[in-house]
Image: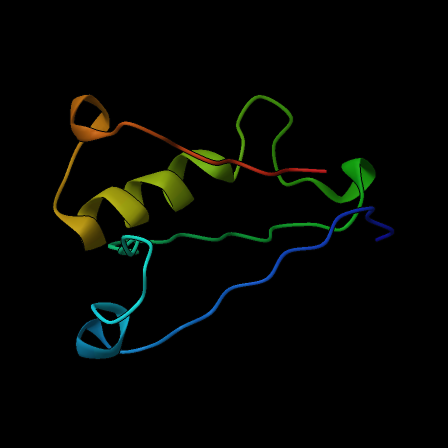
Length: 76
């Protein structure tokens, strides 16, 4: 699937991040679901795979929507 995006992450230990001049950002949870490559292959047109992916991320991070300051969702 063609996408026009680029990202970069620097992953390091908490101890090493403490030596950096900028405060670290801790990734506490993540979720991902791929159910189809094209709309014609979707198992259901009334739901999105985002809902269970977001639920996974909340569960992993042990937080809920009201605990977040920032949420980044990308779905091309």
